[in-house]
Length: 161
Image (tube, rainbow, N blue to C red):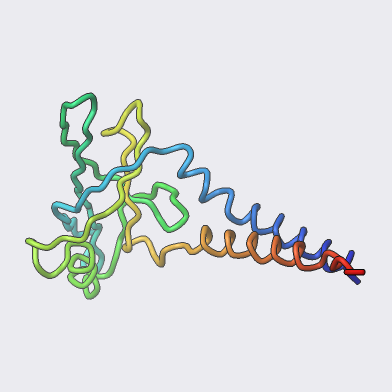
């Protein structure tokens, strides 16, 4: 029975590693900085649809020189860069408010991901307009931890003489 529990724990940890790997690779591949959304532009598409263009700003400090960059790429919850989202006219104002916030003086800080060789060309933010955020990273880490704990507690206890 102990071997079965150890095998199940190992399989759970392995499955968790496979779940977390795509999200973890984003942290290995991209650098990140703090930025904020400066504006959301609405482009009408027909009579009932609107495309939302987001412009964000982030600052990098390289060798003592602060440089500010602007970006416009958005990503979904799985960190895949997407086209600007298209929403109904009825939900466009609510989505704009969710992205910008109610008060322009107090904007929510966002994590901007970018490749170090080309910050302005590769920068993107994870956008709420693309759908619900992914919890893949947290779920995968929880699976790895649960699997390792199962393996650890499936070992035989040492008998004292």
